[in-house]
Length: 502
Image 1 (cartoon, rainbow, N blue to C red):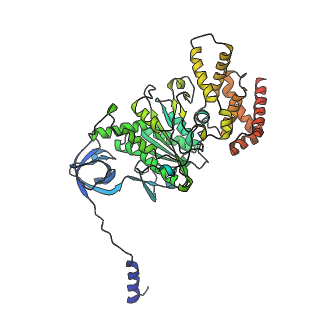
Image 2 (cartoon, helix red, strand yellow):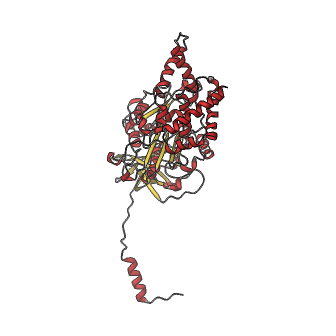
Image 3 (cartoon, rainbow, N blue to C red):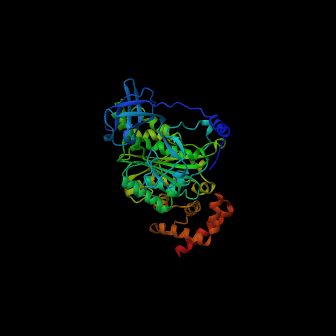
């Protein structure tokens, strides 16, 4: 047993209480007046702020969205039958935030940070879901490629770290597949991925998580999911929460990739909330601030200057169109906000051209600035060749007589189309992409039957890795294609093509 004299104990307590300054904490309470369709109208809460978290009974939360003289309107994060008129509402004094940190890697969470994978989750840091975009002077130019592993994208529509590249197309055209390929290709690169599912079926989200697990992508990925069964408020909050998670890593100096799948459903959820809140509607019943809805989200993607840590956030928003109409309201809004778009066409998809990228309508406003030297050396006029072939192929369908030059262009275009086809599960390294485009560049495919091009390209890569692995490794490491690598690669491809023809 320890014995303390009165003087020692008194000094101990004085030392402990010297720096203690009690603070008075006050909470404001309101009363639920009505609740329907996930929208709650509250009297009181005169000091409530826009976007403030409100706490209801039974551990139910909502977000304040309308501040009026006669009260506050809020959207619930859960079912409306959990809140009843007359129930008390407490203002939390803080805006909506989410737990962030490396603890989230490999986890599936909802937009307010609750785990959905059945395992406990404890985060030590929090970030507000809404935050200002980095200032112009805090940004650096986008000049470092973010490789997707998809030959069509990396060669003709390159994506840079810090870029905002829209993936747009009709339903079931492979939009998510391109995003997942980009995420899978970041394995062992240090790039952290955040996938945001908005308004999807729970079964679809479960299948996607399983796919990420099988490919080993989930280890460096955070999944933020708000399913179709969730409230409109949860779907509205989801992309901002995902952005906050990616932002944490960006400000830690790391490169991140965030996928919003998709912002069409996000706009619909916001429209639903706005109509229920009785806000004035505009075109297609969307509220007047629907442009700001997405601009304040996508502008947060950036590459930071070295003074700010040099991290980056690359955004791949997805937009679903109806009957290929890219001139609709939401698509045109997001096109104007982003740095380019990858347009997927239903006709190409159903014709077996996958990824079904329409090169003519796709563009990257960062362009060749976000391409490695090795890719620049072999991709040169590829985009123009693809566009010319697609135009010529339309006329050829009518059985028109063509001259020898046009026939040669069509023959080459058919082989080029076959070469660019890529299964969803196939991720190509830089050296493999360079080798395939080099084969196209030196006309190594001209004597290969069209139906054998896919097999030829696969066998070519296998042979290059077995007999010329030093060339392939040097390209992957140096990212360039100097003459001392280009010439041996050309000779190796020519030799393999000759053996194949024989």
